[in-house]
Image (cartoon, rainbow over all chains, first blue to last red; front, side, top):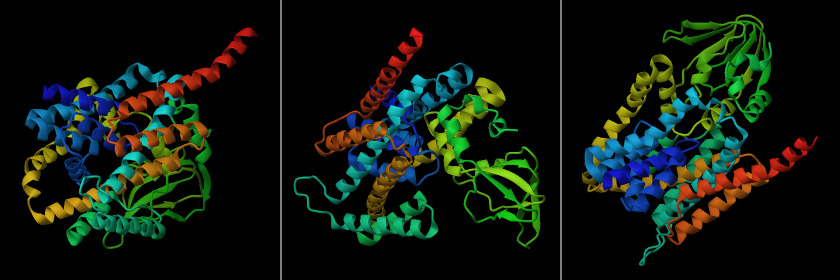
Length: 185
Length: 255
């Protein structure tokens, strides 16, 4: 039952995405890999596409994964599933739960969730970066070209931040990395 | 009028958030005639006018000043709130028309409070909220659908064609580059969140443990569910909190 799996998988993502777009990526990666819908490779292409199209990453990824697994209705289900939790949370917050999010116990839980999320995001980021440069496959060699891109991009980010006193926008970074990809490969 | 009286939602914030807002607000006095926000600068922050008068305007192509609106006593500058939602930024100037006293709440503080309030992307949360306020349940449903629909349509079409696109060498190369870029973006997002995290032992330990567990899981290709990990962190944090507050409560009951 791919439809049911899509629904459950993305409901899980929707329920646990605290703190912005990037916390969704490790969760979606987790869900997608555990149902073995996609390989790590395919997923990172999808993240790239979702990152460079308008709309929240979480919704984009859900549509994408859903449609690749089960066509149009898969896309509809996955998108609904990922949006529903925050939809209901907002409605509930407005109607009855006003006090709950404020309660000390809810805050205590949130205080545990957030650092955990940060740890997970960092681990995913480091793992993906390492994995790009040093593939774990049998006949793997160090991928110097990826390593080169990492170094160049990291340098760009650092220089930009030092001079402009603000962050390089994700879209610019994606464009730069696409250009580097075409140049180097 | 006190600082908190400017916010109708003040009561709904947690005490930590109230502290954050109060502690970070900067009080400033601006002399008549000074231009204190200038188009191409970043978000100044959320402006609250205690007393005085500000005028916001944009410059037309011919260099004429077009007044957008004026801010008077007790006004909150709404456009300065909107500049915190990334990608809606206006090249506008703000000038003091009278000697003005105001508070500035730094953009990052306001943004982080906005983000930690509910799960889910801010855009969707806002759509649901505004839809519900304006037209009840139907409004909430329609507004939420509305904000999801464009990305749904775009992504659906892309997903139909991506496989063919990847056969072109150039696009495949670009994608490999983007892959590297994305992993750096995630890393950067994590690092930024880490910097903003409270510098206390408990969150540090939780973040550290989560980091090590996930990294080891990835390296040895064990499937560790991040949802389970987050639930565990939530439960641990709750029990630590319960354990800390239990003795205090018992003491209170004894008196």
